[in-house]
Image: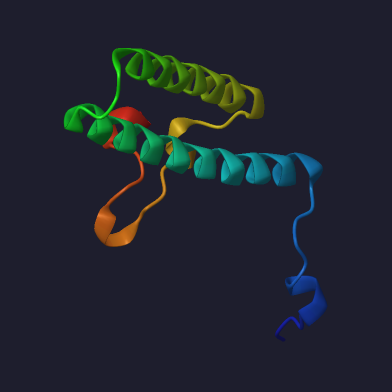
Length: 102
């Protein structure tokens, strides 16, 4: 005899507070990491173009280093690893290089 499953039961979402919190933290940290990388690439392009003063380069470097440190703190706090933030961006490849995701 086959078991009949309740369709409403199959559609339930696991609403465990810890799971939801970690999932939301992972999503937010992934978006912040994507934005951080875009900002870093833009800063590097501007440095290469020579359009930044030495003071601006120092400020951008300090800001990116502080953001990187804060991201590490938040990952530790929520139990998220760098691998958890590594999205597959299709033809663009992974969000994080393999050496950075480890």
